[in-house]
Length: 185
Ligand code: FNR
Image 1 (cartoon, rainbow, N blue to C red):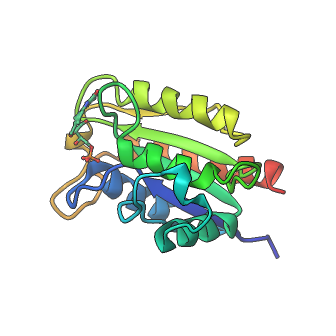
Image 2: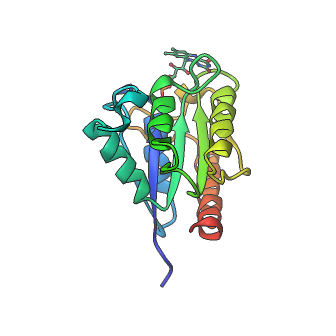
């Protein structure tokens, strides 16, 4: 039987009606059955402060454990001011510390970005990739996913309106599964 991989899905938006959360749910829906994907929430975590490493807030400890137990990490994020939203950067920072105990290292990753704007969160996508290089997360290079005009992707029930987009995202999840399989530790 094929192995099942646990994937932590991190959504960069905290918004209730987030396009990116909807997109994350669509990706979960389209994934091959060999992936078990769960959204790991990031909005409850206090801002990282090194002073608190000795006695970390419970929300940091829970997040670190959750990522540690995952085989892989999938980021689905909007762009804020041409970079990653602060909540996502905070999650990256929390997971990277204390020094020498990063929970990210070696987890096969992928980055998806979406925006109502034309360039689909390209800036956020690539700023995130810069951090992932430092954190030793092997991030899948292709296919890239920058979804522009993303406010038009879903109908009011959260379903993708375009068959073309559905097929593209399905192909992306298939490639990501192969990436995980080839790089998992
Ligand atoms: C944005 N937005 C935005 N969009 C973009 O394409 N490039 C950008 O640099 C920014 N910057 C930005 C900053 C801040 C503080 C906010 C709140 C918003 C717009 C953004 O793409 C839009 O609000 C999306 O709907 C956010 O994604 P979610 O929350 O729907 O997933």
